[in-house]
Length: 150
View 1 (cartoon, one colour):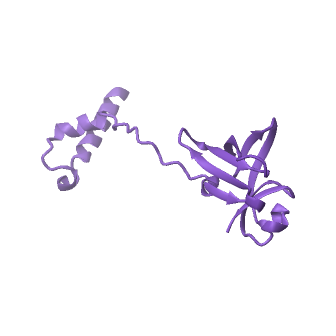
View 2 (cartoon, one colour; view 1 turned 180 degrees about the horizontal axis):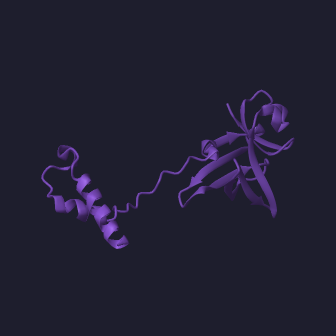
View 3 (cartoon, helix red, strand yellow; view 1 turned 135 degrees about the vertical axis):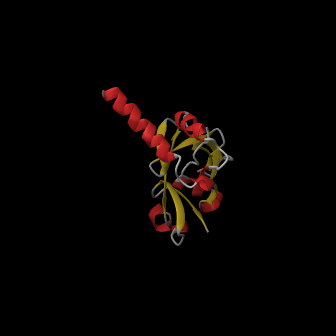
């Protein structure tokens, strides 16, 4: 009895589904196709949802420090949360290369065995008098290492 009731309910539902405005549903489709189409699962798409841009993505480019020091932040094409960093933090040499990773709105990297964090701030927060009036800066080591954009 229950099985017969379910079949009757299904048939009635499918019949009513065919009673809508056929111009919108494809007027040329025979009623049998409604049932066939209802049983075919929707096609799965392999579209990749666009990633939410990281706050640190705005940091890509060159940042100037005092006396010709600099920080270059470049996107790593292999990993959207990874950055290639070139840092000239002292007056000797051309700069050192590091791989940094975005984490909670900062970029973390390892330098000389020590975990370092690049975070945003302003010139006053760097603690460096040469950068005091700047508005857009990145701070690595307060009072010692910071870089700004003009």
